[in-house]
Length: 187
Image (cartoon, rainbow, N blue to C red; front, side, top):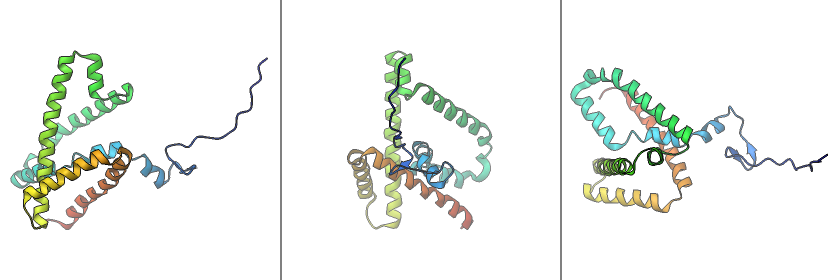
């Protein structure tokens, strides 16, 4: 007959605990601690180049293009759902899944196309940030583009990911400016 030694009843700190104290499951503090990569990823679609595109199309067509939402929204939701389920089930991203299940030439082709698209999107975003800065500050747009580019690169390379992600999470609060701008009505 085996006997088990009594183990001390110390519970490890959970990611949602601060100084060993647990937040109540329904509390606002617990809610805000759970927000993270999903919130930042969702907010990242509201990038400067996207906002510029949406503003330009809205100014040109008004509500005339709104009918496309009937077709595009369900498709966007399906893609997000499929991507989330694949990531949750496999525990890895799209590149790792492609590497496991498809030939290497397809993996490299997809990675090259995505890298090119990301470079162009990043360039458009930094250019739009420079143009926006020129609207409110005196200076040349090219100077602002260089400043934003160097600051972004320095942030990614020099700031630890956990700190960087924390700041990105709180920067999503700026999206409430859309609500405030909408409440003021047309100019």
